[in-house]
Image 1 (tube, rainbow, N blue to C red):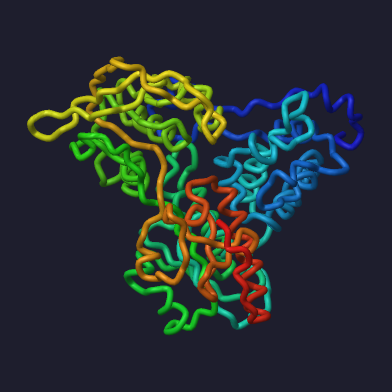
Image 2: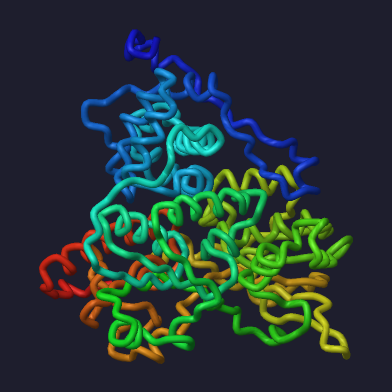
Length: 482
């Protein structure tokens, strides 16, 4: 039917709503919120695609998936073929279909977005990936000719996994070193179960293992081995650094050392890696039942933290943000989901001091009311304090979610890799080449905190550059601009 529809008929088709758990029910469990399209919903959504001669959606995808082709195949119920198309450019579609900000990327570039609702590309990608995983039609392994070259990848987050996928498929030997005991980087420790189930991450990693990628966990490069040792003693021909930006930033106000004040990194890692979300796990749940919890920040990580706190029993669970709600960088879907789960939003407030008792435990926070001022470099109204307007808010737990910086360990053990004043590594954007011959970098360690799909794009570009370097032996770090 899809091929028979006219443009006018396609324009009249409604966008399919993503089925989801009822808000009151999901606020008490860690099951996935979005339930996924049925086959009929996926076909109906794919039929909305205009099949543009020049698909701008592909230009909006950082890894260049042939979106128009996989959507066309979904519309004709060729789901397995659609999965094959996606796999040419991404081995993490079930992840990207869940957590990527499609509204700012592929869907934002969709022609329909100009006057209508864009095609739900992310939901379709998730549907295709989930169906392929649940109904495998062929083994993942494939014959390839070995190049005899070895590449070490430091970090098993999205940049490292994307880089590994492209390198293994062209015949290089690939080993991924992960500092923690779970593979996946931020996918495993930074995103809550209800938004990205951990079995999804494990399944995506398992695909790479089946392709031949070797993984080493509990391997902190910079302590166990240095980059020089990987290149000179272990015989690796190139190294890719995809270690992310996992060092949390704090507010710099009095009282941040009180018991009960967490960084979002620590809070979400405790919940994810220690399985605090699993009532059957040996690790006891964080005891937040009936306790007031405040999360400081307005991004996706802040939404993840506050919604996690709600599921652990926090009452109330509150977002505190120094700008207005309209200026929150979090995805609209995450904000809407949070509101439906009865998360409180307190905007235009800035913390000036955490309050505690004689035992050194957090009891509250003092915030100053703010008002929008002039535009800053981000194009948003700069928040300015209102003189004398302070409010004390009782809190048992505070979570600071205002961003991260790179861990300095890599630079301490490899000072010949140039870095910026912010601690990020300097790497040529098109190639990922650093100032150190044979060493490449990409993802948050270069850009600072960004998105999963942007990190994957950096990993893929670096993989192409690594293959070129291993083939020619020529080295040029390019412009080396971050």
